Image (cartoon, rainbow, N blue to C red; front, side):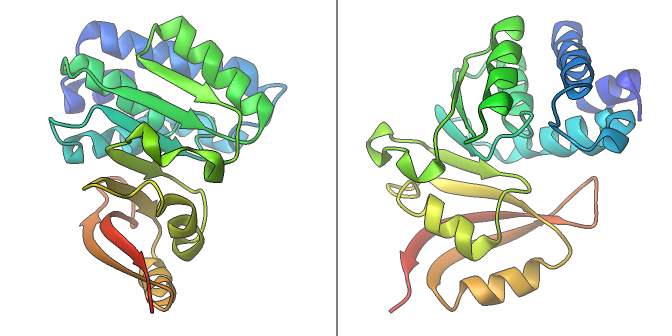
Length: 207
């Protein structure tokens, strides 16, 4: 997949497509000296990173206004969501969280370059305040589901939902997580890989 194919398949505006291209160029430039993503995956940016992340947008409700992306890394899916939400003219703020300072520096540079409604925080995810009232929690390649729910459960209150990317072994992760947690889960097949997206809510510690 290339830029033009991505543009056709998503239907985003030329301005938004330019935003994705700027993000890609910043990623290539920064990744030359700072390990943000595997270098071999940069040639697959449009399919493996951009489209994979962008597919999440169709599962983000129109009432969502505050999103937290845990373990944001190079911005997948958080930056893609911020670009997509602006493209569909939805006023929503994305908070990208990562404990690695160099990654957060890249995220802040990207947010500024694209003038996104977003912020990046160099903190551990467990320090996020549930009182901030996030509507949606996202994570991609961050932690096994059992551990991820430990981080996310305080934030998944008051009808908040999680959208978590998982690979082919997601059934094993669900089985393990259900030993420790009760939750509602919808399994959504990924459009770009053999993995899935898990929509999770109503999370509580198992008795």
